[in-house]
Image (cartoon, rainbow over all chains, first blue to last red):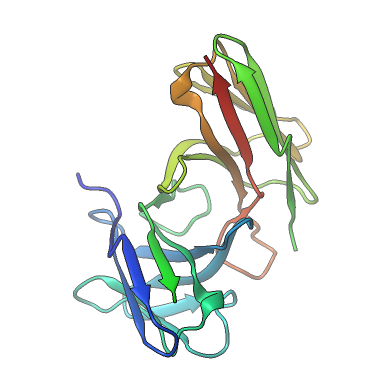
Length: 115
Length: 113
């Protein structure tokens, strides 16, 4: 049973370009979370999605960031017009049901570098 | 909102020694997760605790949640180089407004041979 799969593992973008990060949850998991880990900072929640629905995006920056989890295919975190401050590790996690009492598994992360 | 404080921030331990990492919450913990992260890699799930006084073990790692459910400790017995990494505690905050886990800043563990 494959774990949470993220790609790309490493991504370099120039300022102003777009970054797309993909996440395939563990088999059977319909709850997906995105987190961001900035250098020297902790892991911060960004968004929580279920299939075709954004449940909670309270941690998402108001502009340039969007997330989706379509009926078919992986969840996508999209960052438009990237800036240097977007450089970070972006982690996807999934769970069988909502987090309360359910184990949440993380992917290996996608490291975004904006040059 | 809930805040988690981990201590110590970093720890250097000689191989074979025991160590303890603490995670203290500003609010009652409803679900406390421990993860390990190797530098430049993802998070590996270690354990989840929910009940006051609960204790779980996996190999040489034991985690406890205190009776008041505001503090958790992670104890490693006879540490090995493979234990090196960043240990993160994360918590559910059902009343906090956000659906994600809140994490501490992590404890960096170095094992000296």
